[in-house]
Length: 221
Ligand code: ATP
Image (cartoon, rainbow, N blue to C red; front, side):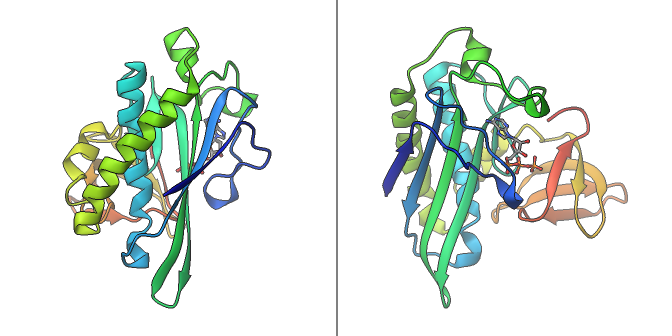
């Protein structure tokens, strides 16, 4: 339950070694240290729990309609406002700890050219600045609630419906960028393992596991 917050971050990272921008003084960058007693293979679902908590907190604190791009991005106006990275350390078959890193674009005014079309901030969406402290408070409060619901089952059973309501990809055409072969289909929602169910052209349903796979909306996020 410890939380580390940084005012600036020089080497922020996303999945698969991608870079995460955290301009000094304008964004939120914080990490939660957790020691859940669950199976290590279920720990990646904590990314979805965090995405739900951030989206709910932004909705409530800033009054902005926030959606989730599976598995872990919070999206406002079709652009990414928050990134989440979950990493874990294991010992034999049990979890030593999990670190959930969260970056939220709060008062950021501009982004490097390579992400300026896909990134936004609360300030850009609202037209005015917001204090960062109450937002981190709101995220932690909602995370605590969702985390305890997650721990009741050790999976997304109790959170699935709420997550699916916020899912930007739901009932949308998506392209699944699988290293073993890309395909398109309609995203139906997540299952209790947090996999994205995608209905393919032949009507079969694939359960997409996060990790190596990226999902792109055919028309924006
Ligand atoms: P994918 O969309 O392929 O699933 P991802 O959403 O999992 O990728 P992350 O690892 O969460 O990607 O985030 C890294 C990516 O986010 C970078 O490659 C960059 O394009 C973008 N990015 C970096 N910094 C920011 C930021 N401050 N705001 C929005 N987007 C950013």
